[in-house]
Image (cartoon, one colour):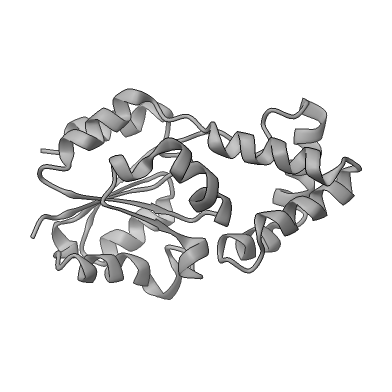
Length: 196
């Protein structure tokens, strides 16, 4: 069986943010309220304990904006997240030799809006989202990675992970795989080119 190429989403393939098309003051308020003051709730959202509708209602109440308006901005921003076309081309070329798996700690909106809009199934054999798995990548000693390797009958020791998280990279290496950490947007392209 082919080895697996696991690739992260946020900070690895894409650098866009939720609600980014709102005005800067609203974006800053949301960042402070959600990602600084309520980080535990964000983690629970990534584990499927909250829906995007529930989060947007909380945010709308906090910043004093209409829910419908805010949620439409949110959906639009999810559907228009950008990945450099050349990155997708490089991933597509590697599919001859690797099973490609997008492995992301993300929210329900990724599966509902982002993945279909960007047609990610054209580039990845499987898209694994923590909100559907009900666990983050590093939880349970990387069980999500092991489960995917078992599903494809692949040896995780021959697999590669490209991810911006140092902790996740170290965990993957402890499972026997090879990791390539992303420290800047250009790193992802470089790492994809380096795979032989």
